[in-house]
Image (tube, rainbow over all chains, first blue to last red; front, side):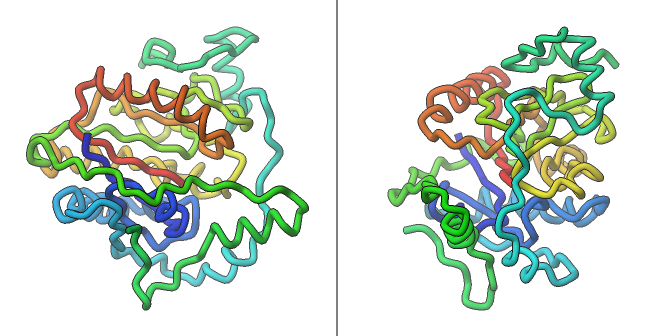
Length: 122
Length: 168
């Protein structure tokens, strides 16, 4: 299957060496664009899709034009360790999400794959 | 030969940063995936405009109502219908600042942009579901033996022609 990986971490992607990659020069956590910027997000994805055709050599990482807009590198380089504790029970963005999951799956929350049947009906 | 960044691009070297960070914390050195030999490039089987694309992202995205991810080598994945509204998407992850991802999950999970690409005719269609998981899985063996086969099975079942992978 043809694949393309987006990345904002050039060295990590170069080490993993996927066949095609598009580099987005953003701080981590924004590989696909700036928040609440649907136009900019579409520009990135449109350009990224073009790499399926234009990359002809495996291992290529091609920059995708996207300006973050404000300086960010000093802060990115200064971060030493911003990881949070590695809880081994499910974690949620909100308490309401936890309540909804418990309501659907029970207190055990044993869900190896939350499949289509497991999502709320619209 | 893996790519090197253009000279005028000031990329942040996160491997070096993590190495230094771990050393300062007294941890053993983190072992990054290191694949010096290139994977054969698979050409497109059909034009993009006729292709079915699956979005696969590692940013810890789930849909409200689904079980969240644990933050410790969680090898499960979530299957998110491709028509899911952005407001139903949530994010949980231990290793990156989620402030903006929680404001707009499309920054790590560009489902809305992918739908726009279908509307534009840039791609043929989206697979019925996008697949998500939580990265930061420290065992490459368990990743290869458990999570990757599960994802591959679902991708094949959905008849996707190509995959867009979005790590964080």
